[in-house]
Length: 400
Image: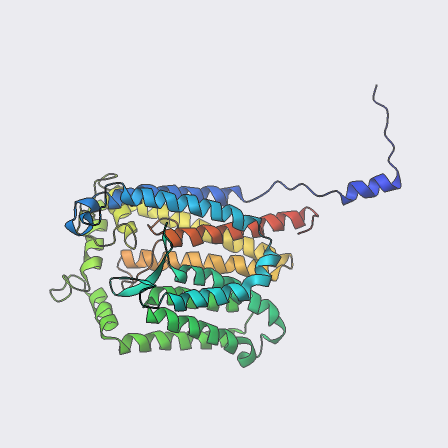
């Protein structure tokens, strides 16, 4: 026999005060992220397996599995960093956002110091950390997400006033841009500028102000291209990569990327069967990984990649909107900033590989070889999962 249990007032209060158990996080987002990471691991191995046969890399001791092992190690570090980032409450990220931005600026300065930053192909973008080369521009992307979101929360009451609302953020972007262009890394500067503009727009800055900012950014990039002979040459090469003038110069990468994608046709030549990765297509395992996907897995493989990234970006933006609806503006803008980052960088990388945009040194998020890029991508997505987790806690009546 079960006897009825009577609860006193104190017992009821204690029951109500008990912590709410929340089943927790966006599982489809996690599985899509894991799918992209694992697919990237396979494709990086396929794209880099022949690099050890190249005398240029053979002297450095590269083996067939060199990039596979390093990429797998990067994934392990990224997984651990993502777990740690997921444990950090969004209010802590909001408090530390300005300091994280300062740290990113300091690292961007340090990487420019001779004999400190690593120079590769004329660009000084990496810091040696022993177990990996760290690229401060990747941290700067995440730092800009947090800083811009925090800035919009702090300046919410003056967002209709152009100079007071936009000018300080513009100065921050210009400072970061000057440091990145000194490396040079125009691709990262473009992503960071778009992140800042996207968060300003999503944060409610007047539409006329936003379009004015956009025009100024376009003019700034056009001026940089016009003032740089090698950037102009790259633009002209993009317009006609197969011409006699550009086929063996600035148009070389793009022409071989298009050849690779063309060879793949509908279903591809088969995993591992790429010819272009055999020392024809430079950076096949980093910037031009999509070309190898197109050659080996065909149009079907490219469309699957586009669909996964489209779903990922859409889901991140939805989580951000949900947070803003729950009156968590910083968390919402930070999540949407990550969505802008992932979506825009994917768009640029795929556009370059498909010949729709000029060649730009940006990797395919979550998939291309690159330890610091993978690390910061996973940390950014862990922050989005934290936003989603806190959303669920609040919707179930809990506290964050």
